Length: 129
Image (spheres, helix red, strand yellow):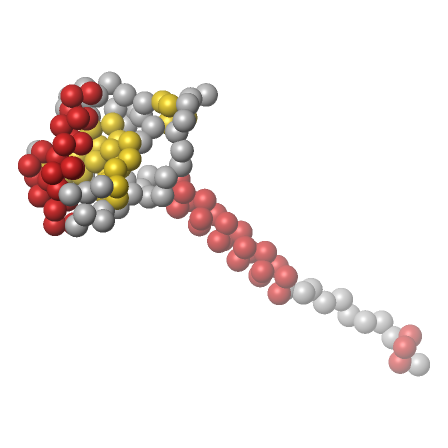
C-alpha cells in the first residue's frame, strides 16, 4: 500500500537560483550602460546620416570656449600631436564637440591629428529626431 501514501511537498530551489543570477547579470549590464564611459558631457551636433561607431581608442573633446580635452586633461594642439605620435598611427580618434564649438578649432584639431600620422578620424554627432 505504498502507492497510497502521501508525498511531501518539495520546494525546488535551483530554478529560483537561476532566475536570480539572470536578474543579477541583467541589472549589472544595465548599470554599466548607464555609466558614462568617457569625458565630460557635451551637446553634440546633430546629423541625419549619423552612424554608430565602435568605441574610439582616443576621444578628443572640443568645448565651446575652444578648449581641447583628452582623457580628462586639457591639452594644447602641440601636446595633442605629441600624444598621438606616441600612440601610433593605427589609433582611432573620434572628435566630439559642443554644437556651439568654433569650426576653426575643429580644423586646427584635424590638422594636429594629421601631423601625428593618424588616419582613422571620426566626428561624433547625434541623430536628428
